Image (cartoon, rainbow over all chains, first blue to last red):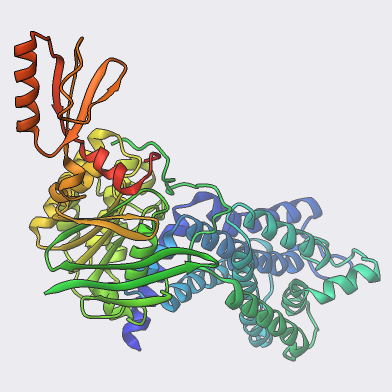
Length: 271
Length: 295
């Protein structure tokens, strides 16, 4: 078992190195949420808002969740789909590395990045925007993080399982961005949403990740573990796992065109 | 000792039979080529041997194991170079080889592998900056790094220009001297001739001929053609074909045909213009075996 664990950890290091070598992925996962915090804090000013919290006190945790979901969902789905359609997964499958170890490493790498994104956001919030962390809420934060990242990683792999590398970026962004708006990532605590839109957000997983996470930063809220939200996330985790297990293939999807590093049999090749 | 034994192998894709009862053996240390046009069943056969696909019927033994049920231990001992597969474009050459090397228990050293495939000078380059031919050599390096007993090479030079093909052939020849058993697929006759000890020609999911390249198709596929142009009609001792002013006949016995023909020409004072004895090229033999013009 420890032999397998060592393999997974070593592979996580390779996956991480690969991630950091791709500036676009690194930017959207790590820097983009920080940039949004900077913009919001500048535009709205970091003064107490209607419910008595500063802009950063609300937006830092909300954007931290957004960054974590970008890593666990968008980035994992796109990266895995590209690796599959370029034949990387098929190549790995021909080696002695057990397939589950490889997939565990991919997931582990994006969970690590999600955690990094959150920690970085909260650290920037604390240092520059006087973000207050309530120690009694830390169990809630950790549990919500685990449930949320697990659900979104499973859903990301479910998207990978049913779509080609060409369409995965569109699908992940077209699902994440509208959900981010209606789940309260970008609209501050003063904004009012129509009830029906709220009901829609209630159904999808993002709100059940954002709301308890943000609440844990609002002074005076209960420190009880948000079991209802965690149960919703668990349900979406199950949906993602079922779809991924049913449809995931290691062979390239043939409906996708060639990408970087992939060669078509008809390509002219010179040395 | 046979590294590979295949008997009665059958694979269907829905109603289509892609592989229709194939048998062959590969001795340890042998370079064996499956030669055939696109769609003949080469890749399907090889992917079954690699453990990437299931089979519908037949027996397969590779290194004494059944690839359909063998696990990671089997993959420790084989190396697979697929027809087209990608890399992480932002890793360097030596990082990529190191990563795949870490999957094996008794791998080769990174420098050694890069030397065999001729990529040592590019070891610190990002993979995405390699030319297509260099990427193909990296493919080969990743197939080799586990120090396999058996190497699968699926169309190693398809799409290469002639000089890149020559270089790739040199690399494969080096592997032979390392004592590796190699199963390669190709649709190039000259590639099979250059690299393989034994060739099996596959067409329509079945093996239509096998042996060394020089014996493929048997003696009847290599009969000579005697042809010339002349004003008069040659003696009817042979069944001359006459097309566009050229007389020709296919024969096993060129000595007798030429003797009779030249005797007639001398006695009748006839000029035999452009007299030739030609044998079918390997390409001609291959085309007649596979019945396929679209190579």
